[in-house]
Amino acid sequence: MKLAGWGNFPSVDCRVISAAGQDALRASVMAEPSLIARGNGRSYGDAALNPKATLLTRRHDHIIAFDPVSGLLTAESGLLLADLLDIFIPRGWFPPVTPGTKFVTLGGMVAADVHGKNHHGAGSFSNHIESLDVIQADGRVVTCSRSQHADLFAATCGGMGLTGLISSVSFRMKPIRTAWIRQQTIRCANLTDAMAQIEATQHWTYSVAWIDCLSGGADAGRCLLYLGEHAEPDELDARHAAAPLAWPRRRLVRVPAYFPEWVLNGYSLQAFNAVYYRTARPGSALVDWQSYFYPLDALLDWNRIYGRGGFTQYQCVLPKAASAAGLQQLLHVVAQAGMGAFLAVLKQFGDHPGGDMSFPMAGYTLAMDFPRQARSLALMNELDAIVADHGGRLYLAKDARMQAAMLHRGYAGLERFQAFRQRSSAANRFTSHLAERLEL
Image (cartoon, rainbow, N blue to C red; front, side):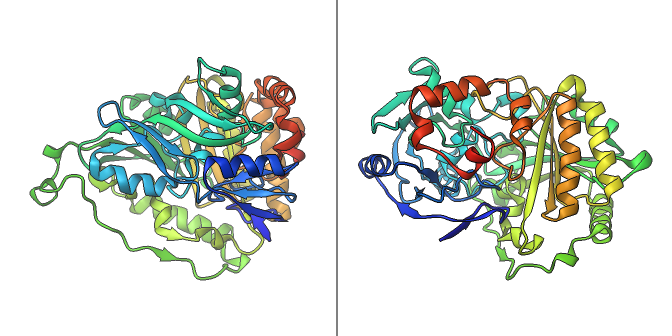
């Protein structure tokens, strides 16, 4: 069948198979000379596409064990984060790191070594993993961690499924006392102001900025900074304090069809950004966890907004010393092109090393969505040069068009990763459209 990532590009004819249970997964690995695992298909590009065999793992989704004292959870890799949240938030537990959507599997979170709004303090998902069970090319199930088969662990966290098939994940959940977030909203006049505010508020657990990448001049990089903390029971009003771990079930809206491509243009995006920036209410508020962590999940199939041609999310990270200059240059080029996105996000990363191919580094990350057009692809090539010149790199989980030279320039752990793939025979069995495009 035709498969694509969340960006709807590329679309590839893939032979699809499915398995659940470790024995069935092992049998699939042994039976297929070439395959890649696919969880919920939320990587944006071609990471979970293999024309020869794409193995669907969503039915491999059981919780194996949970320790209510330490918070240690062991679960199968196909478990959806949304299901985990529904089970554990009423019991007072929250994942230590979460990406911006809950519609991802645990295996996908490991493969992409996802980061969240708390990376500056907590690091990425791999920093909280106790161990992984990974099915190797020869069918062996190997338990790995930082101290046991450490080379497999380092290659698998952020390795985009190219080191083996992740069967189960053990990691520690964090305790919470309510299902609410104390949110502080700060309006920042430009990029310099935004970075100063982010630096000054690092003591907050969560921090993320929506950034207007179409504004120019003195307003260039203006944004809304959203800080967050898990609220305590005494911060809730009487109605919510009676059931602090309950939350309002929000009404989901589905985008019914692909938008015409002309809907998203420089004028409509500029108008949206201006209204969004000026109508936001600075100050403090209590919001439920879904609204803070997963605002876009309320709009099902929102990727259709970009039309049938699909879109690419351009997410880069720049080292801290180069971030101010590099971000200014990136935003200037995007604003000049008039192709800024209405979904643009700025976050700070801390110094928390992950796996060999983990995306985060100490610095700032900027993510922007662009419709897939000849103009936007040319623009992203221009952005690549700026990112590379400032010592940055692109996020594999979002990428669909980077060239191999850009990857080799940006990832210092690439040689270790490739050496492990060859040494373990993973390169002969676990591959994807992304791996072939980037010569992994």
